[in-house]
Amino acid sequence: DADAGAGAEAGAAGDGEMAVEIGPDESGDAVACELPPGEWLSARPRGAYTVARTVGRRAVFEFDFHVERLASSMRLMAEEGGAQVVDGSELAAATDATALRARVARAWRQCASAMDAAGCAGDAELKLSALLSWDAASG
Image (cartoon, rainbow, N blue to C red; front, side, top):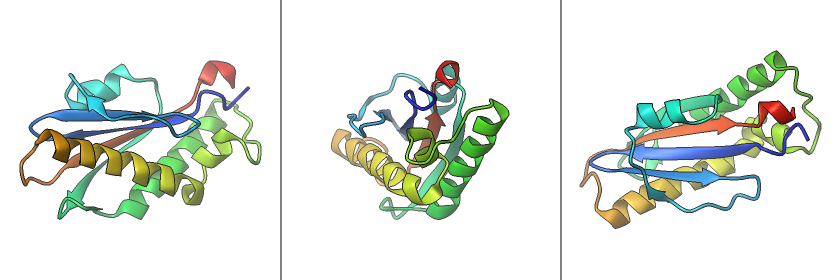
């Protein structure tokens, strides 16, 4: 199945780091992340990624740009890898900014909420990372 391993992952960094993995069923919980964002991204599977900053800790600066960037990059990577993007599939949803928007928003909200609950970063703005990958071996 070309899209069985698709998922979205997000992390936030400040005084502490948080990460959440959102799988195809959109489950996932924010957990403390032991790695700085750059190392976290390097340790994950190859994929499309973006890094954003919050505004007032409750909005993401140029959010739609970041979602479009993820979808566009995923589309290019899928084409480069010869993956078939089948309508209604997980990979199709990952290459469609409209479909992807809610998943990225949910993941980033979860990271921001977890950081607030943990008392991380004080009042500082958050740096949010998102990595979108799929199992290239499967598709």
